[in-house]
View (spheres, rainbow, N blue to C red):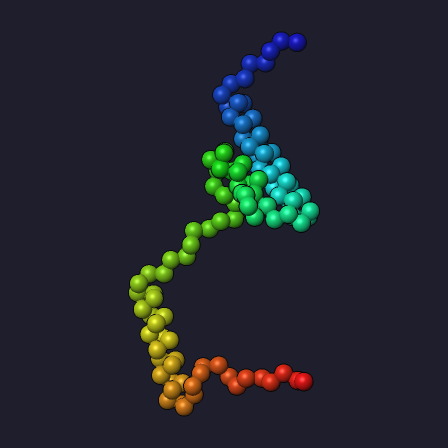
Length: 104
């Protein structure tokens, strides 16, 4: 048997396949640690994060934090002020309803 000639496309495809396998293995490792009662994120990074960081891949499931524009914050604050104004006009000290007493 002779050596196979691989072109760049084949090599890149193989690398992508190995990367996806590494991520799957890391996910399984984290799942096993959770089943054993070990929190993979306590004291160290989960295996998936380490693998993804090494591969230069974005982390799974993490989204950018939601940002509210200053105009949006101002609208929210104004709406809250209106609600409080209505509640105070109605003679209420709180926007919550009456407290429910627990049965003894």
